[in-house]
Image (cartoon, helix red, strand yellow):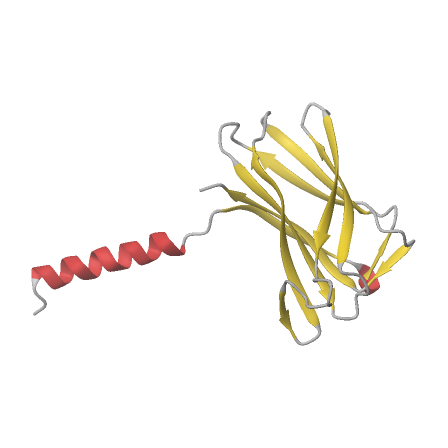
Length: 157
């Protein structure tokens, strides 16, 4: 027979473990880039349903590139369109490697995964569907060696 104290300790430990493992992820989606190439005018669009206007979020882009990607960064044009049609445009720089070519992200073989913060304390000002549109803003018509691109929205803790 297990004592009442041991049972209580097991329940508290198990509950703590479950709470600690919960993700603060609100939204995450990825787009695969055909032939690991991203053309200049190719917009990647993500649709997010805002159900709360009080919570603060951190916004991230997730870039998956090969080690053959020839730059240390990736410039992006970002459009955030609210349900009312109000548009906010921004340009962001994603640092993928240091000046010596050491990749910042996590790698497995020839693939590097990068999760890059681009906005903090973001609040949805309106309820409804938001559109996040991304374009690569590098000086190449076709940017090679970008495999996947995504967005992740996390509830700020």
